[in-house]
Length: 254
Image (cartoon, rainbow, N blue to C red; front, side, top):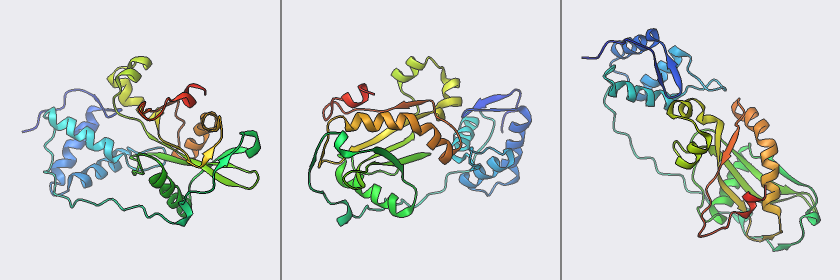
């Protein structure tokens, strides 16, 4: 027996009216044979609950439904067993092999630029480079993401490294304290924070200040690039530095 809706609720960053909550209850009763995934997609469509690119906010809806169930306002269908998907292995090819060492000054490389990685061939190569040369290898990002190649144009166009930005972590005490937001604010605005979770300068590239140069460039252009790719502009970038591996000085220099 589900409880009666008596007030509005804010869940997963969205405020639901009493009418909308009652509608969710009715949808669940009307379609008892839908899987949880199908139910979330249906509710997103009914509520026009979408991203800036008109994609259903499926994961946010699932989270909201689980919270409604804990409150006793809905009874969700049992989760159906799913076959475990094996991650597709990244195949290393000659394209990502180590190149001859480049020891030079930043100025000798000419113009340093960032290229957004979009087409299939570039994405495959980006994944390959990171899987092969980053100490954490490649893992498929969750949620909205943006990949870059770090490029130079002298003595010829060449790729120097890779950057990846994706969704931020849900809860981070130091960050949340620094922003001074509460749980409701975080739920509503967390998408405006993005995470730099892969940063790779190829091991054969020995160029002082290249890392900080790449980071300085990306902080200037990523808001526009993210707007183009995902329909909104982030306002904050976070990252984690493994201090057993790195000092993080390139981030401090930006």
